[in-house]
Amino acid sequence: MPIASMQRQRRCLLPRGPLSGCHRRPRAATTFASATARKAGALQAAEADATLASSELHANLTKLFDRGTDAGGFRCTYKDLPRLAARMHVDVAEGTRAMDVALPPANTLVPNDDAATVDAGDGRPAWWASVAAVVLQVAAGVETAERFVAIRADLLALDAGVTADALPQGVTAELFESVLGTDSRTARALKMVNQAAVFEGMFVLKQALRGDGICDGMDHCRDLRGARGWAIHLELGPGRVSVTHVRREICGDLQQQATWAGGSFELEWRLRMSFDGELAALHAVDLRLTDVTLSDAMPPTVREHTRLRLAGGHLQL
Image 1 (tube, rainbow, N blue to C red):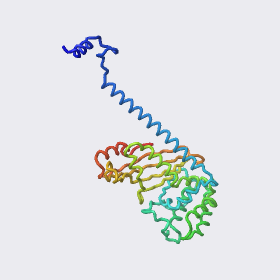
Image 2 (cartoon, rainbow, N blue to C red):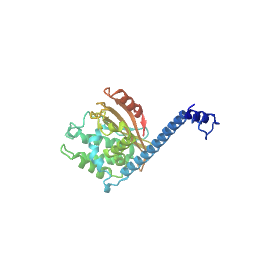
Image 3 (cartoon, rainbow, N blue to C red):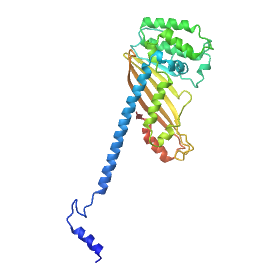
Image 4 (cartoon, one colour):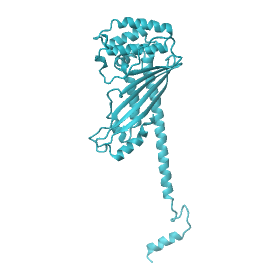
């Protein structure tokens, strides 16, 4: 018998044990346990990252909300409210309104982004008609009856001087600083109606999906034009106020990357900010995906990976 065969036979006659040459580790069980541990570790890391991202989002939005007028706290709102007012829905809960007033009809979403150039039909620019309507709706829901009457009177006085060629940002600044007062509940309810707040949410959304192919698509997003692209909801209830941005983005149209092969997907996501009734502080922030629509041109494997990664459009961040 060859010497090598005799040595192998001798080793296998030795008692089996952790120190013997014939001891065999249960490879399959060990591999499965290791994979399970890695997945659990990855899940814990993802949850930790999500918690950190959520706290950072809350902190950054709080800084934006708390920024004073002298530090440019309303600058973004002065700039963005004129073009966003027509995209706003104000929902006043029963028992919230302090007075019985004749309110303007609820705004409807505009089909494009040209509201600033459209005449309202009475010599006023459409953007101003939308801003004035939103301000009255919000004031009716958060102010006292006496304060609402004063705001409405001052707004009508300002309205008389707004012409078709008025600068939206300048008129809005005068509205907030001379009519509402930047410390008023109405002004604070409208303060987060701006693109800066949306940018904070979009940054966290991209960071949460960073690390695989989805990131490539998220880095090439553009907002969907028209009525479905951006809606803003203000909910006014007893002791609570919330501002919710609902955005729809087109992502992933990366023809230069073979893995995407011209595929694309639409994301709808929501950023909800909740305040106390006095609007003294930002109490809670909720960021989540609410819908995803995948392109038929996307390769099946990429399509399935994207669908799973985005939780079918139901992912809380």
